[in-house]
Structures are given as C-alpha cells and as structure tokens.
Length: 222
Image 1 (cartoon, rainbow, N blue to C red):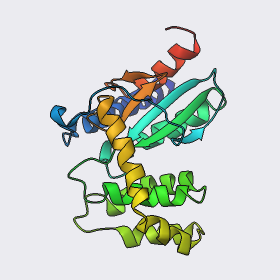
Image 2: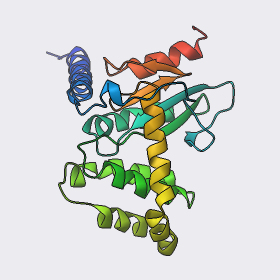
Image 3: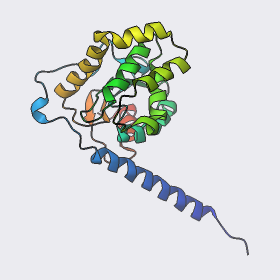
Image 4: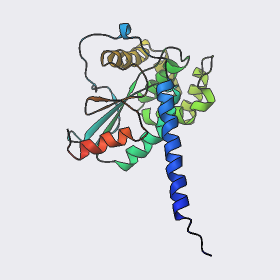
C-alpha cells in the first residue's frame, strides 16, 4: 500500500511555523524590561535620521522598515532570522533601517551597540550587526562586560583596531547610541524589537505581522 506523506509533511511544517511564531511572540511580550512612560520625551522626532544605519536601500518610493533593537534582547535575537529572510525576500522593494534601543537591565546592551557603532565608523556596521546576533547566545545575559569579546569580533572582521579602539573610547560614539534611544522614547518605543513601517508603529502579535505589513504597503493599501 502506498502511503501519501504529503499531508503529514504539510501538517508538520504548519505546526513548526506556529510553534516558532508563538515562541517569538512570547519573547516579545515576555520582554518586560521596558522604558517607563515617564521616561519618554515629548515633542516629535524623525523615525529615520540622516545618520541612521540603512542596511538595504531601495529608493524613496520603496517601503521603509525601521527596527529599534537591543543586541542583547532575546526577542530581537529570535526575530533576527525572520528579518534576514524578509530582507532577502523583498530585496529591492524595501529600505531597511536599524536604530539602537539598549534596554536598562541588560549589562551589555550599550556595550554591544557601541561596538556596532565603532564598526560603523569603518563602514562595517552590518557585519558587526550580524556577528552580534549570531553569537548572542554566547554572551547575552552575562553579568560582566563583554567588551573584549566584541573587540575580538572586530579583529575577526579585519577592522583597523587602532581606529576601533579610538571609536569605542570616544564619548561621541556612546552619545550616538543614546541619541537613538532618546528618539525611540519620544516615538513611544517601550520594548524591543519595535518596528515602524512607513513611519507607522507596528505591534507584533504574530510571527508574520511584519511581512503582512510590508506586503500591505507594497500592494498600495494605506
């Protein structure tokens, strides 16, 4: 008797996707290390600034996705492969922008952001961004500074280490990280990851919410 495995395979794939989506949703909502409402600023700021880090640029008419992230945040780490898949799938159709939002309570959130910003000064932001997320399980939640580990990543990436060390020590590097944090507060960001799609904040409740928001904009739906 020939067994038709196709329904079983499809069912298993759907179950895997549901479980993965539930895990990501749980992490986002479990991330209770939030910025208190009274700490948020007033007024208005741009969702994207001239010095924001643009990973993918598709032009002024493309859909613009902005992510406020914390490299030490487990939810950001869980969503990272989803983001990378979407960047590949919608290459040439979206602008993808990353902004820092180091959360209080994470020992190495600012330190990792400073490492990324130091790499950015050499035009190597994306490589450090990827390295930090791909190794997050090795250093995340550590109660000690991982600055030396991040420096080793810079070495592995072939950065000019004198320039890297100078950037890390330069107070303006940390100021640049904190400027994103302050903008995020004004914009109402209180957790990570927080996404904006064409300037509108997106609440992540399901694993495919970001893709749905992108496709809605691409289809021309306001």
